Image (cartoon, rainbow, N blue to C red):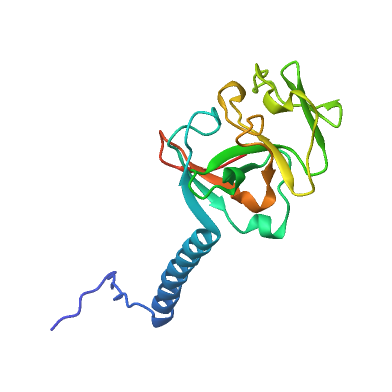
Length: 194
């Protein structure tokens, strides 16, 4: 048999390298473990609930699902501006209320001319909050106890909050958690609550 002269190309058979297979397998398993642990942490620390009513619009809407962090306030105190989830007066038969912290323990709160005053000083807030038509029980100065918070809805003129006698100041023991993430209604995506 005669040999062919000229250029010849040999295709090398591709073999899977055992080290590459092992690395890919470890990457996939590691990814699944990380996702699983993230879900376990989020859902053991968090709790899911729904917003009821329009008192937190435009940030949160009626029926919108939120995830709250149940552990954070065991380790730290709520801060001004936090959106919290609580049971009014600890009433276990009530639905969860979702409101924004305005007044902190030990402060005096008063609503004058539709605005919030803390210790006699006007609280600087952005213009997205309407002036309040009703001051409720905060028409006169309220002194918050060492475990009480004054909360308001973002939709100030359509909110049952600390101005209402049946809600009043929120005791720390009645706070369930901090509103953490919300499910966007239109896009069905998760977003942080600011």
